[in-house]
Every structure is written in structure tokens, then in C-alpha cells.
Length: 300
Image (cartoon, rainbow, N blue to C red; front, top):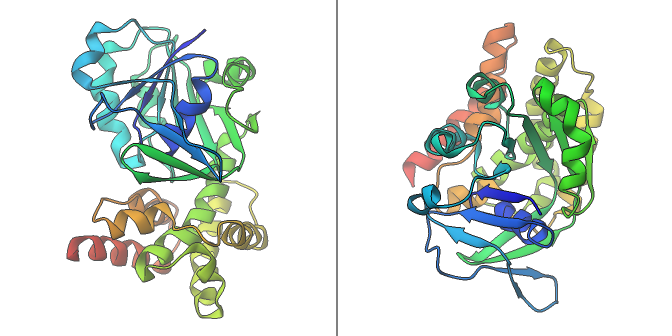
């Protein structure tokens, strides 16, 4: 049984903790009340308590060392969360990141020791929290794990086997390309649903088509500059497929803006804008969406 720490008890963090606790000892680091039981709910089945220990940062020094630390926080929270935990990480623990958007991998690799593997876990599994302590599992999805440094690439098959309790989990050697493909879906869905306060499925209306196409076209130019093989046609097909499969869902960014929380726009459209400057590719639509979402958050 592996000793796993999950950082963050958002919807995805609670889903991971529910599944992984069936086979491992799982501890979840939370900023909320650590004494309250968390629950998992799937469709019409009865809710069940998540079999994990919930702790605050103050309790961390008193616990046994962890074998795996999974950061299930938003992209902009990773650096601070890692800095807080770094003093308590043993020299051989594996680190896993799981968030929307890009970034963080290069920064964390620079801070890890030679025996610390870094992985990225991307997932289309969907859920939302109906309150602070209950996660509703709303979409099955698939999860893919990939190594982000040489040690992780060498051991990715073993880590995938270790985390097999996560439904539909596979491994890949091209995690950056898969992350970019997911980024394209997020670019098509998250900012517009947040800007217009609509469900994912409503984006299939023709009035949004031109904006979606232009956002994705810019991102595909960045993909080409990074020597990734991603076409605009495949990006559009993937985005509209997800819109259909999650038609009644609200995106995470819509929820963030609706609840006056900081969104991941900087790691999504902001990443494309940043890379555009790096590769001298114009990205006016992503620049505009970044500005509008940041202004909307500021105005709430």
C-alpha cells in the first residue's frame, strides 16, 4: 500500500482521492475544515464517504513521509503549494501535477532532486462540488499519465500501474502534445462560457463559431512553432465533441468567475499570448480573451 498525499480538495482532487483510497493510504491537504467527512456521489447511486484522511498544513510535519504527492490545484497555485511542501518531501518521492492549462513543469523540474520523478496527469473525468464536502462525479472521461523528466519517463509504466484505481488510466511518452491538445479544448470552451455565463453545450450556437475558430487557429500556429502535429480541424472536432458530451455542464472557469475566484486564464489563453511573443506569432483573439476574463474577474 502506497502512502499518497493529494494537495487540494477541489472536485478533481476529491475524485482522485475517492478512487485511489480504494487501494492506497490517501491523505488530502486542505485549507478547509479537515475534520469534516467528504463524500463521493455518482449519478443516482447513494453518496459514500471518501476513505481518506484530511489534514491542514500544520499537521503535515507530524505525518510519515509520502511516496507520491499529487498536486490537484489550479495552475497558478502550483508554485506556492510546492514551496510550502518542499521541506517535507523526501528525496525519492514522486511528484504528479494535474491541472488545466500549461506551465509549471519546467519550474518544478529545476527544483527537484535527481531521485524525484515528475509526472503530469491529464484527465477528462468531470465532477463538481455541490457543497464544500460533496463531489458529484458527472463524467467518466479518460486519464493519461506521462513523464516530465528522465526518471519519470523511465518509470511511467510502473507509476501507471500503481495508480490503476483511477478509471480508464493509460500512459504516454508524449505528454506535452496531449496537454496541448487539452489546452485547445480549454481555449475553445472555458473563456467563452465564463464570459457569457453559459453551459458548455450552448457554445455550439453559430454565434460563437468564428471566435472559437480564431482562438484555436492562433493556438495551432503556436503548436506548429513548437513542432507539435496538431491540425485546426482536429482541434475543432475535439472541442465540439467535448461541448456535446458535457452539454449540461458548466466549465471550471465559468464556476470560478461566477463565484469571484481567480481563474486559470493565464495558463490557457495567457499561455498562447506568451508563446506568441516568444515565437513572433500574432495572437489577437487570445490576447483579447485574456484581457476580457481578467477584467471580468476584476469587475465582480
